[in-house]
Amino acid sequence: MNVLLTTTSFQDTPGPHHQLLKDAAFDLICERGPLTEKRMLELVGDIDAFLCGDDDITRAVIDKSLPKLKVISKYGIGLDKIDTDYVAQKGIPLTFCPGVNHTTVAEHTFALLLALFRKIVREANHVASGEWVRITGNEIMGKTLAIIGLGRIGKEVAVRAHAFGMKLVGFDLYWDKEFAQKYEIVRSESAEAAMNQADIVSLHTNLSNETRNMINQSSIAKMKKGVVVLNCARGEIVNTNDMVDALHAGSVGGYGTDVLNVEPPPKDHPLLKAPNTVITPHIGSRTYESVERQATMAAKNLILALEGKKPLAQANDVPLISHR
Image 1 (cartoon, rainbow, N blue to C red):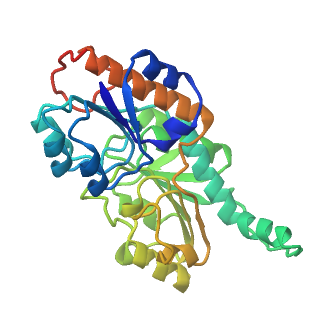
Image 2 (cartoon, rainbow, N blue to C red):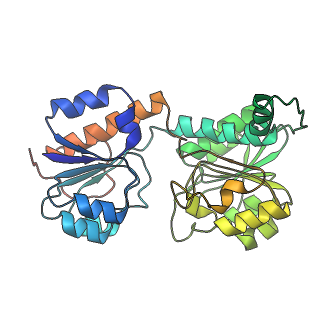
């Protein structure tokens, strides 16, 4: 079996996931993703399975992959780079890895939050340059945090925010009443209503037609002046140019993000030089603990699906056929 392995954290992090693929005796074609549609088209055609990250798996890629392609195992939970409808239409099983990175991403969200409020990056850079510049920051205790998307990650953010003494408002289509009561989360009737009353907005929703460019000039204008926005979801949820303008104008007081609309960004990406920003290179789920959980699940999903057995988590309901 020829397996295209593109996720770099899978390849770079030691753990039992490597032995799983070795024991399965796959012929691995290793690439450093995420791969563009152009690069995917150059590689596919004689590939039996993908173990992929955020690569562009479009209709054109799927068409060129068939009839050889048998399974797509997604490392992670975000499926927005995959044409899922077309994958299902072509009868290709698609697996993914829910429930493995929520702790790690929630911790990273708080790292961005504290870095912005206490000016940690700026201060560390001053000291590293031999300067003793003491900037006054702000506490997060008592601040209102709006959590947009209360799935596994959003809930973990809420747990930590509650421990920090923050006021919580939230929006999710599927409201967990018991959880919200336990952590004192006030339910908003819409994402906009939650964001408009918040000092800090934390985004934990998937990318869809409804959420793309959700943070834009219009929505920012209705938020509190100086609001801080955190994004450990998808870069495309935030309109880049509108965010840059708002940061320069001061209507957004800070933007902490682990994701961008283009990854890796070109050197002239406007957010790279925007004021009051902390940007990390999509490492929110990249800890040794999380990678091992995620990679092991992705490897097991791949092997089980190729054997015609039920994977740990399947993102579509395509019938499984043994290919081993």
